[in-house]
Image (cartoon, rainbow, N blue to C red; front, top):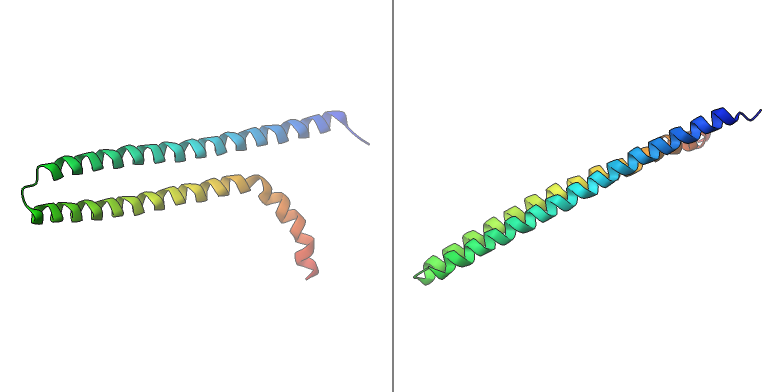
Length: 115
């Protein structure tokens, strides 16, 4: 027999779980946006410092050395940041998948036992 109280309870539990997951997803996107913004600010500040230092250089050798140093540090900073943001997206993907993990597992169990 259909129990309205039980159905209402299950519906509320599902809605609570969905809202919790949405808030986790939102926090993940906010963290990624904050990280990207911070990196952009730092990158701009580093470039401004580089240009300022470049204008005060007296020789071509010093300018070449300064440019090489700036390019190396910029590249290393970019790779580190790309890795960090990539890991953040991977964690976000895990969070997105979490609510579907148990239903998929239950749905695939009969298929796995049949094979």
